[in-house]
Length: 280
Image (cartoon, rainbow, N blue to C red; front, side, top):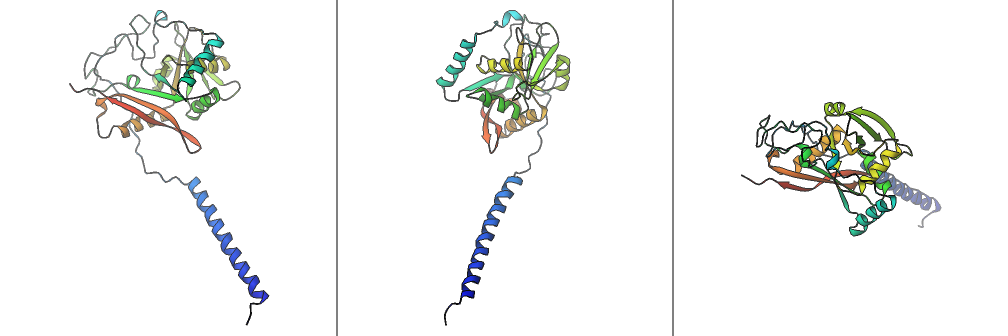
C-alpha cells in the first residue's frame, strides 16, 4: 500500500486548518486583552473636607488668593534665557523632574484674607490633617514641549492665569491645538467648583505654561499661573495617596508627591514619595 494523492491533499488541508485555527485563536486572545480590563474593583475615595492641621498658615486665605505683587519677583526672561533654563534642567538630570506645589509661602502682605483657623488640631473640624493644598505635590517629566502638552491634555488639566487686582481667571485647555481653547471665569466660580489646583515653584516648565497660555490668547504679564485638575483626577490622586499610606491615618501624612509615567498606550500618576509627620 502507498499514500495516494488524495491522502496527501487531505492531510495538507487538515494541517492548514490546524495552523489557521491556532493563528485565529492567538489573535482572539490578543484582541480580548485589549478590550477587557482585568482590574480589581477599587472603591471611590471620599473627598474629605480637610479642616484641621498641625499649624496654621499665617497670611494664606482658604479662598483662591495670590500673594502680593511685592512678594513675587517679576519674571520676564528673554527667549535665550528661557531656552537656556530648560536646557540646563534637562541636561543636568536626564528627564529632570519639575515640581509644582499647591502650597505658596507668603508673608501676609498680599490680598489674601488670612487663615481663620487656629494653630493646632481641630480648627473648624475634628480631622487633624494637613490640607490638600499643603500636602499634595505633582511632578512632570518632560524633555520637550510636545511631550509636556501631551501629558497635560491626557489628564484634562487646564492652565490658568489669575489677575492680581481682580477676581478674573482666564483658562486654556486642549493645549495640543495650534490655538488652544480659552475661557474666562472668576475665583468665586473656582472656589465653588472645589477643584484641586497647583501653583508653580521655580520651574523651567512654568515658561512652557506661559507660552501655551499666550498661544490661547491669554495675557500672562503680572499674573499668577496655575494648573487646575478635574474632580475625577483629584479623586484618583486621593485614592493613590490612600493606597500608599499602608494603614496609616491621613492625619499622619505630611507630604505626598506624585509623578507621571507611561501606562500602556497612555499615562498614569503614581506616588513617588510620601513623608509623615513626627509624633508629638
